[in-house]
Image (tube, rainbow, N blue to C red):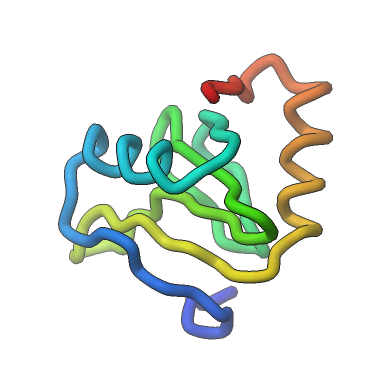
Length: 100
């Protein structure tokens, strides 16, 4: 099982509502997508129905649910491959929606 602490990340927001998370992702991103539940970033599976994921440079910013702790917004640094993966997924998957 993959653990978030294995990656270079920072917490932008914690103990937030889904609406607050989406606002923070949008505010810090050049592009933002809503991905379906089960989408994975570096083996970390995202929980929910429409999870905001955005990009700033080579950083990926997303809403993350940490069981028993609530919703967070995480920035993982230097993840150009994950950005490329999501952009390719967006082109072929009608469940991924571009917002910004």
